[in-house]
Image 1 (cartoon, one colour):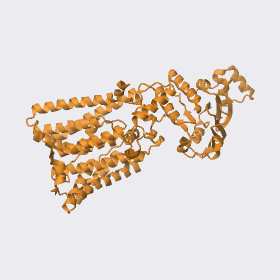
Image 2 (cartoon, rainbow over the protein chains, first blue to last red; image 1 turned 180 degrees about the horizontal axis):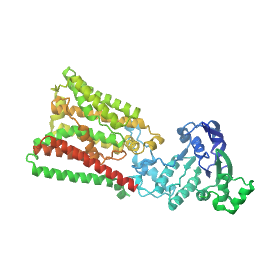
Image 3 (cartoon, each protein chain N blue to C red; image 1 turned 90 degrees about the horizontal axis):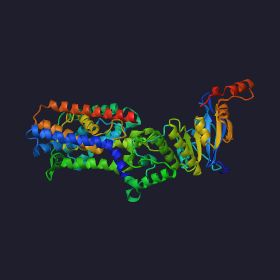
Image 4 (spheres, each protein chain N blue to C red; image 1 turned 180 degrees about the vertical axis):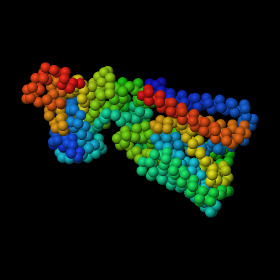
Length: 270
Length: 321
């Protein structure tokens, strides 16, 4: 794991009217690591990711890419640098097959004299798709011809991740990837997350499901009310610790800590 | 792997094979009950009639798949025919007159684009609106009167025979082939499906949704204008009141063929079968010497059946998905 962050935001702030979404947050993503971005609703996780992925402009702060100041003002700037996002709604076209989804907006066409006709190079696209899926160990019934609305939720998630990974050469953001999945499918997606990171890509996982966080994250970053309250390696951190950080119990407040210690089930919980 | 490739075709194929069966059955019924149904004259006039509906249907499939809807095709066809007839009457060359007709198509198509894609008006309302406006304009322009055509090229569109088959049939086949090729091989075809199925995803993936939707509406209008040429060729004159309600026949053929109203899925082959079914129905009724209102009842009936099947399929898909 490299010591230089591939993508870094320093002093990022964003407010919407009187509401402060982000307040002077520093956040770094390192190549090959899975960092979990956690926090309660309204903590600022989505805003942070959207800023780094170019979907939102911060009010202040700087973004660095590969150590240099980067102007990421729109999603294209981000994607051009190999930063991709898998949103919660997956943004897949259900009527089309896996290959078509893989190349959505980036279809390969024959060049030369045939360029104006934009005739697709289907075979090349199918081959590319099969290779990307094989790399991630994803098994799908058919890459060409089977519309993805016939795949299970986990398989569709896998397609979305495979697509983002195919084009994300540097950083991958995943927003609540396991939220709508069953146990087996969740396992598959988490395993996928590890494999993506193993390729050297920095993976940022937004999630509120504690067990999943603990399973894959190398590092944890906790946001609360727009501020970063913790940034630590995941080793040795318990679920309770994490929940406490998210919800904001101050251990110095003795009576709260006592109550927390005696009734662990009452503290939030997954 | 190649076996499951057909699962994409399975749902569409079911509809198509059902349609093919319906076609064969209907043909058989008509052949037995209507004397004169199985005659060259009947086939030729049916084919000529079906040709201009067919051309509009092929491109209507394209629009529907992209998530749009163009109900102005009838009005465009008639108006374009009028433009051509009047141009010929005023002494323009054949090529120029045809160009005028296609120009009308491009003009109305652009207007549809502005309303639907630019302003975001519901396409059902917007295209019905343009349909009414341009029908009215056509009537005003010609004072409600017809204009005779005596240009051979245009007349040939409607009634010339090549190896015993009407010219219009070849043109319709070409139209279907073109649309089929677009969907089978080109990026435009893929993009049309994407935009119709999930415009948000398409936009996020970097596709220029407005441009793709506009292409569909323009193609629809220009092809309708071309169909209008076949119409006046067949009629021998441009008749302002012609083809009333043709857009619903077109819609029936497309939806019957398996293209959903919602967009994102569809089959050109299905549309062709739908067009043939409606043509056989029309020819049969003609041969049975049924009163004209039976045409209306039959067309309406088919439309209802088509919409019902589409609705059932959509609900089944939602339950499964």
